[in-house]
Length: 211
Image 1: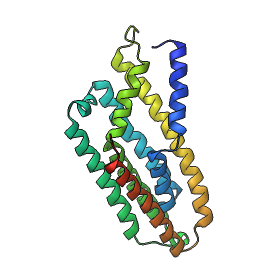
Image 2 (image 1 turned 60 degrees about the horizontal axis):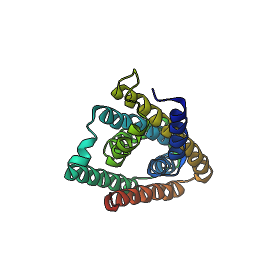
Image 3 (image 1 turned 30 degrees about the vertical axis):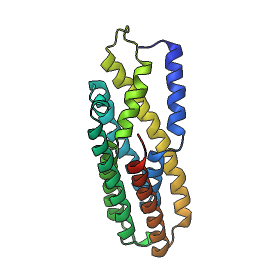
Image 4 (image 1 turned 180 degrees about the vertical axis):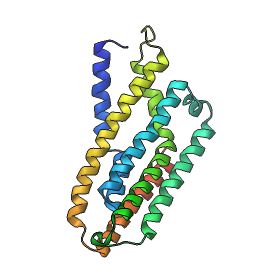
């Protein structure tokens, strides 16, 4: 593995990137505000697992395809953006129910839905793939005993874990705020609309943001 000084720089830089407010944090917060803390945590888990698709792609060299074939990058980016917008609109249209009336089964279903959606959102985010492709090689030591692909897997896993820890902190903070605000179906509907607005905004930003 790389020398201590390089690894220290890796951890510090990763921590800065992880805890800097970004799309993943906003997405997790939107799920929490609209569906509750359980859904927010499940969304964080989904983002985490989806992130490993990009880690594996980087280790296998597949991420370079986005640079080699710009049309592929654009297609995946637009697909991911449309999916985010669709999720946001779905939150707008979903029926709200007072928290006191929500059953444990409904909460579990909401959590499972947030998990599945989040895995898809992360896998369809080519910007994550480009980040791994640009960031990881800077901390790889070709002369180390560990193969380059294995170093990429280890470093990518560390990045994924650190980013997820930041998402969880965001979910807990958003959950604490949401708990104070909830109390009726009307308030719940408003919170769903806020969450939906965030997701639509993230989708539009992804669609129109220059690469």
